[in-house]
Length: 311
Image 1 (cartoon, rainbow, N blue to C red):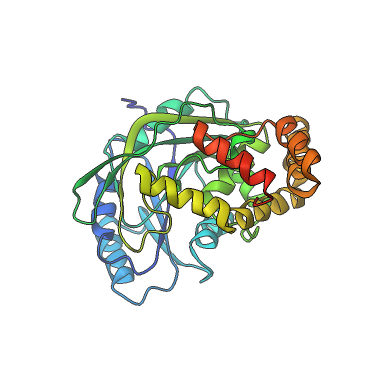
Image 2 (tube, rainbow, N blue to C red):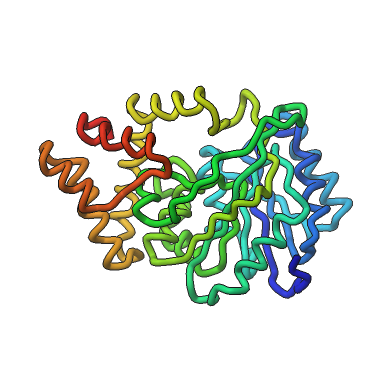
């Protein structure tokens, strides 16, 4: 593992009524083999003991290690983006964190090691697989191992990895800051993947799981493996929610077209054709855009959804 602690890293932790699992997540930060990190925790209006727990850890770690701020009260996406755009904490690298997972001790080390190969001027994003656990910490399996490359064509129709695994650099943060804290998108992690790839940045999907991703009733997204998960994803695709999310992403991209490279602008144009024209133009736009989802089944379902105008 990397033993060069020269790169400063800030963890952006979003919290809301997370008292049950928060301490385990905080302890996993403390147990990281990479030590040059600071934590910014934005609480979005908790009514339980979440803020008290954060205060206890701040007392133990010191304010230079843990800073707490008040979230905007607009939901998880805006809470994370408010930290990215408004926090005064500046570093070389940044990591998103949910409140109810457990990080493997090597999580930050693996990310920092990869970023050593990336020029600081290039927007870059690191993400990984996860180990799924239930609310009692029992193993449930692994998240999918995606084999198709990360790209803008993929980001337009799929969020590749969870925000709880993401680490990004200052160049990527500048993109997010320019786009602003309220781009009207569904999820901060999907938006990060979109912006980095739209700007021609680098994305690396690490096949080694770095997070114990807790599955429970209050999860925003939940498990992404098994037949039940595949059925739920298809239901989202054909039931209208995915259509809303994708179109909100497209609108946000179009408002920030100055951040997008020319090849990606062409892809965006053709994909927009696939969503808004007649059947033949939709099919032509779909194939010319080159968009794809990670598995054959999911990609075929996307094609059917385009034909039926469900996206």
